[in-house]
Image 1: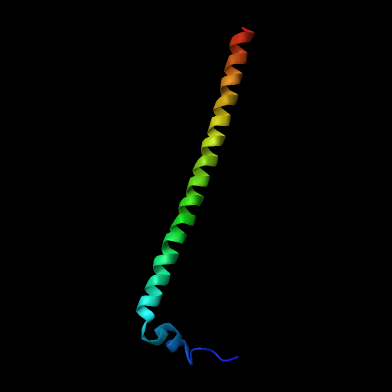
Image 2 (image 1 turned 60 degrees about the vertical axis):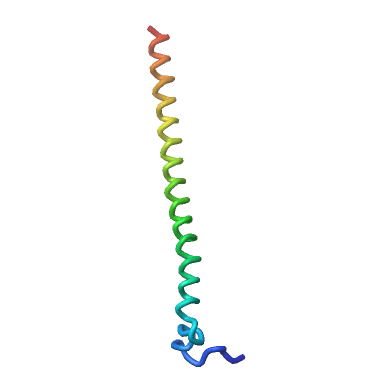
Length: 70
């Protein structure tokens, strides 16, 4: 099996269309990577909010139990 390009330089040049090819690749990959990063950050924020809500509910139950026990 033969490669379509004779060297790495030819590969990156893409037959004279390298600028457009690699620009298109970058314009496709950058938003995907940003979306992955945004999703990860949002996921962490949601988990943090859930943990805080659960802790708040535990504190409220404890305070309610103390008030009812008096």
